[in-house]
Image 1 (cartoon, rainbow, N blue to C red):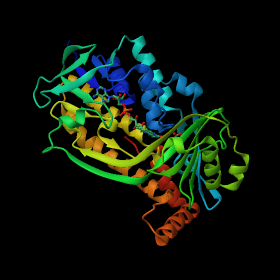
Image 2: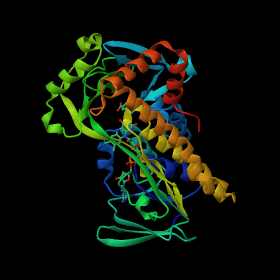
Image 3: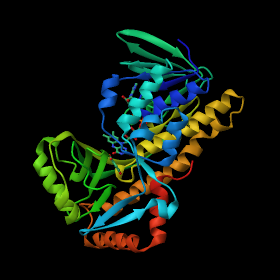
Image 4: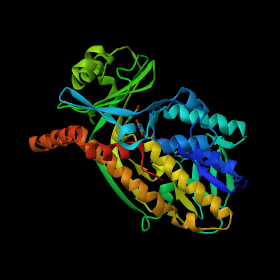
Length: 388
Ligand code: FAD
Ligand code: PHB
């Protein structure tokens, strides 16, 4: 088999890249290890930057998001039982969209089906060959049979645990990382969200977040030690802990109910450089991970896709500038989102290895944010998404 761009991974970045390239007349094959149902069962991000919204529209997959998503003009931060609002619209003239990653992925799969896009599920043993030559190819096994896919370029959209990053020699690749000593325990429940906008709460017992998917579906998180197991957390224990950490007014009015999903995600910051090796590009979580506190993971994957899509279109028009400079261009934005996610994580979580001084520093920073329009503008500018 032959195609112009072989895409490893059928998560949001692989599907979006495939959809955009197909519409530009560039043919792709997406190789995904899991089944479609499995990919669609993963509950992940919930907040889209406006740049992401526009990219999805450009890809022709914005209709359901525009009909069913919720534009938010601001968010609440809470500390010591008191909340204050960051008004994105007033501060920087922009909004974000609440629309789950599961829905984005579903819309992308449907669009790929409609265009007869090639997405092959259940592939095993993917190996990228000759990425540093002019004629790369990918081999994989499907139902016990070995296949070969020849291509011009390979897009590694296969997430943090994929093969693409591992294909780049150790002598070339440099990795930067920080692992946080806690995780987020998250639940999804068919209850009315406690607030119309998200609440990020800093508390001496640990961070909490009130988020949502729609008017009847809430997503809540609490910071937990890495040693905690989901099975230790009954729904009642979760609700009790959440209520302790959010402002009393919200705690008193919150609607509780059974969880329909419950999981613990570890928090980490990670960047791999460079994001290109020969004819192989790394995209999204394959190249970088952020702690979810700034809601940046999915949005960063989309901005990588933006740069790579334009670079490949240019390359097929005879201009190699974009593909040559993809790594520097993408990394410049990646590091700024890494910085924002790291600083929001530092501002809002309880660090077991830090003392009272650092706790006071967090409180002082939140107090400063509450009363400084300049500080709020900086947070808002980053939260709604830096320009591409
Ligand atoms: P992925 O979504 O990881 O997709 C990669 C795909 O590649 C997967 O479908 C995988 O099955 C496939 N794959 C992997 N290896 C291979 C292989 N060898 N061969 C073929 N296919 C392969 N972000 C937020 O903003 N907010 C959140 O609340 C949030 N929660 C998260 C919770 C978890 C548990 C995780 C893991 C991530 C979370 N994120 C969150 C981050 C966000 O979901 C990711 O940034 C986003 O999914 C990145 O998209 P991607 O397409 O680059 O990678
Ligand atoms: C979510 O709704 O899952 C969500 C929202 C905001 C975040 C992280 C996760 O910062």
